[in-house]
Length: 64
Image (tube, rainbow, N blue to C red; front, top):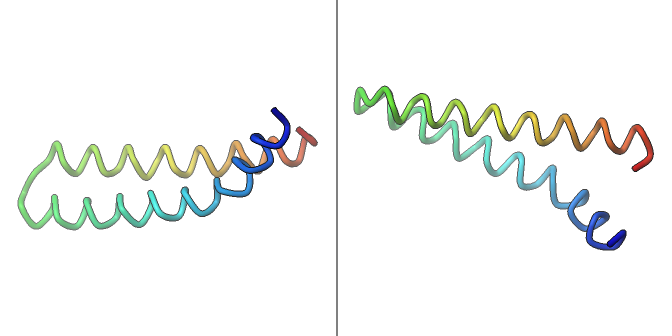
């Protein structure tokens, strides 16, 4: 279990950055198409990625 957790903690920053970039691209496309639901979904995706990265930093500071 510890090996899986270490692997996940190493992949978390890369996945966070990937999802943030994807969310920004979706937000730009939603604004260009005047699609409000697409814009909200992309902002939620960005927010979840930031929270994932923050929790990862919090858990590594706690030593877990």
